[in-house]
Length: 353
Image (cartoon, rainbow, N blue to C red; front, top):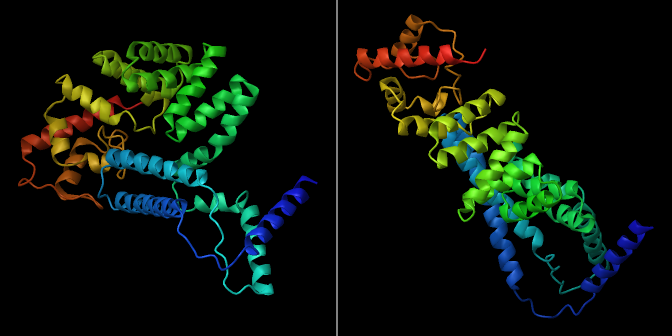
């Protein structure tokens, strides 16, 4: 019944458009220019993401920098797609010589597009994206419906779903609004506490309140890797480097594949003067571009999980292997090689069981 009524409305609307005065001069509406600009920006974002993935596959981009750029481009694509969704439907261009068959074809296309907008077109728009970018875009597409549902029902679960989608799509103002609504009804909801707290800290105007929220969220759910990651960031910002490193190491133990803490850990250790000559040599040679800032792997394998002994590691460094270049004495002195091997040995000893 509802479907029939919807199709009837769509058909009547299409007929009204097609049979309107067809000799009216064409005009370019502001919405048309905005749509073209947004579509071009969306295609450019997808193209940049593909180029970034290709550059990463060739080892031309450091994994940490690539991940930051991938998140930036993903968020940009999500914002663009959201802006496109908010534009009014593009008007059909009138025909100068209306013929019966042409009208039927256009009418059929109109109905198919209307139905497709709820079925296959959103999935087609996600084609070619990496899983995390596709996840962010799907989240952005769900936000309007989730927001309406949360405001209609007022239930914490509905507000939590809205907050999750907005946070994943980098629409942080909406995420803060949704998570605040959750906490008004359940002040001990760990996800809402840590994420709203992180947003407050990053906003800069309610840092103390944000720190308290992040601490509370981590305490309520100590096994959550995101909670430990956020706690590490907050403690580092407060200058509590020792406690920050502990929280970030807990994050790594909870999420061994996670790379979000690598840059911060390296920065903290450098700030504390705990970096040694081996770490300096590692950075100087550009090893982090393949093996990660902390040797945990990236384009190349993890050095912390390496089974090579000291002598074999030295031979690999000197002679090269696979896509890894060779570092002769002209590039790497014996003293630097020893410090680098000491660093690798320490990392192997520190690896998780």
